Length: 598
Image (cartoon, rainbow, N blue to C red; front, side, top):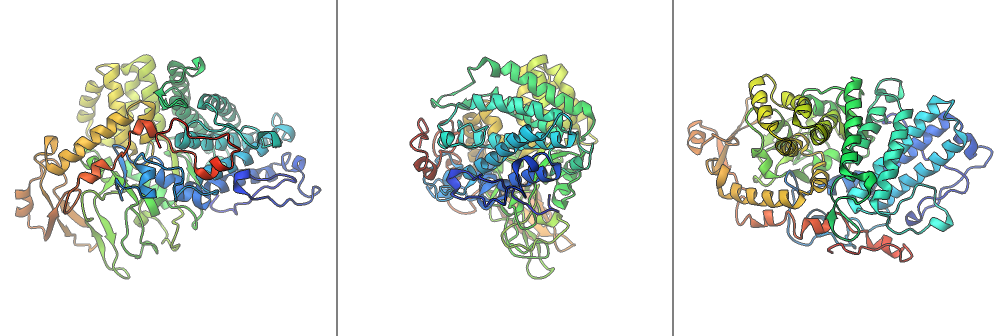
């Protein structure tokens, strides 16, 4: 999709969402009649582009959802972490306000997600009416893709706002205003939709459309169905304010785990995807290869002038330099405890957690330097310096967002099979991930697996930990913790660990108080000593590094605000954001934020 112009499909008499206050101009009926559009595959393809446009709008995924949702847990934090009441911090620290200056506009993610849903609803109705999907595999594939994209939008609406209005038909005068629906209604429809969609969609690389990860495949529809099933069968903050499982028998935990198992095993047994080397996964993402059939399953496509993945989530560049024309990166980063959660030899740590930033100087001079404090680390999965082009936009980087990758499918399979069949049956799937994390160290993996499979609970605990190690920086953790009912527990644990780390207590007691560093011979790379268990200050001094600094969350002063700012209020009382005031005001009194701790 990077290679095509994003177009809006337009039909006579159709308007966008009421909240967006925009009307689509319609061409003459003879040139663009609904019956023509949705009976012609080449024209119906425009509906896919129209939906994706809603993903990439300024205040949609691009500049709001990807940076603000999912932050502040035991693996990921806002690098401007504050306990104060500024609007950006409040979106992260479980203290969101209905008139938030970052979100309380009629064109933010809430509006754009529903805009995309309305476009999907129009296309689904049109294709079902005119598309002859029983005799047109191409039209059936388009329908499958649109059903899946609609499910993506609803998945993120539920993650962000909990129980939201269910709109599965185009808006009419009778449905202009809707109240919140219990999310169970939406989950059941999405699980049905994705099952249908998977029947229409090819596997990756089975035709030209699915040769790129920017287009939906059978693997993604099945993987998304598994992800939604785990969420539907898990815990969540409900309309009455309580955190509990669903009481709907159709969404029971065992039934949802059965769906997740089936879909994930189908994907694995298809042989259409594979694990790459861990660093290779993210090098390929940053290189924008986009080839299907590797580890990436589906990516939100951004053009070069859209998207803020590195801009907000990547390794920070203090100045413009040979890699980028924007001095950005590092709005969010790893929770500092993650630097010390990986075992020795785990190749994921140095890809995921980066304790340096780029000071490019001018022209081709300059290199990496250590950041101001331990409290400012970066996600190494997103790097300007790994791209094959220099970013020239001052405001966007254009890197795709990897929405799902094969490792997620493998670990969902492990979790579901452990729940249903026990740890022995689930072990091969977890082992796949551990084998990659510790290449060439079979003895270490064997020892770990023997311990992890001791019981169903032990194996579940291993999955909880493994998903933290594998997916830090990919914004899956908050949703995982919510569905496991571990959000409060893990945030409390993180606060304790942060205090112990800062004060060198507990397991951190023997860590050096300083780090020691120098620029390598290549003039760019920074070499750092003191980041590992077993390192000592005495050895750091003896090695003769040219510089050193105190390695604390606050280089000077009191660091207590850092851990206090992870969650200002009870996270379980504000698992979701409120519906913003602009939408409450335009809801004809049907929307409210009852039972949210605002």
